[in-house]
Length: 112
Image (tube, rainbow, N blue to C red; front, top):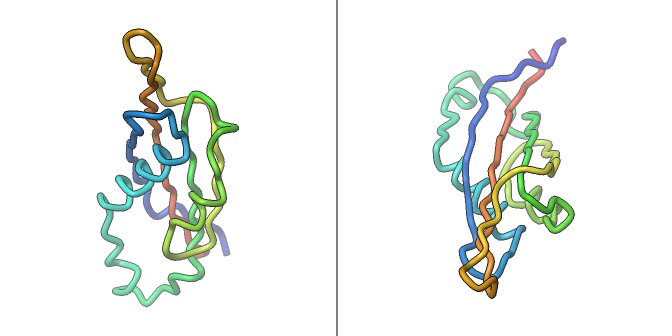
């Protein structure tokens, strides 16, 4: 059987004060999840635990994202998380604060 991509969903999240990359990443994942309804999984009687979920997070400082926290925030499937350079940092005037903007791409696949 071949693994087939079933859905690609994207989201954006931010931490407006404090520069928390993980918080921004978690919000980006939740944004993507809230745009999705995978009703076809139940309709086709697919096993949600067999679902392969590949998450890519883009932020300016990938090493500052707790990928395990992102992974455990997804409710179902075999989840992998990859954090890459992307997103956007917006320093405040005077440089005393940092807004972090993260992008998330979630790919759901099944063996078919």
